[in-house]
Length: 240
Image (cartoon, rainbow, N blue to C red; front, side, top):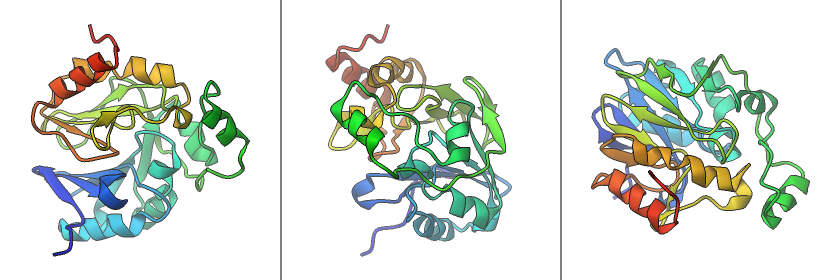
């Protein structure tokens, strides 16, 4: 049996894998009136999978009215321009990453790592520039299905955010923490400031939620906050 193109993790909230083994995920929030908000757009090849997932959940690209970005990296914004054009949806992102989305240039890498220095020297690695209709800030609550709170967690990129959906109790972690064969950090060379990534990830231990939904890896529904706090303790990152 073929794998479904989306997983409903709470009523009206769907995880959309855009790479094998749930390695990269987008999310769809379906409001009571049928409007859809997408969170992240995967790589350049992801829009077809996202469109298939929308059809599977009974929606259509024309019902997508907003696209929210957790951060401006090619595996999250690679499909942005295509989906923005297909849907006509407004693109919204943190004010610190909006310039990168408009220019199509990935934010600077962490030069303290060899991989970061190497990636900074290599050509390419960006994505198609896309206009940003709205810039948000930390603590702002977006009008998405009862409220989607912006939690600024810089480090992976300057404007990286997690998103807390109040009604469903879902926290989308962004790339602060991966859930790929267990909880782990993003590779340092993908970050703008790896040490800051670890520092701001402690915000995820302070919030109240029932599901931790990852942009890399499957969700955790059984004690997600404790799992994240335990991970941070193992990594010797203070949570208090």
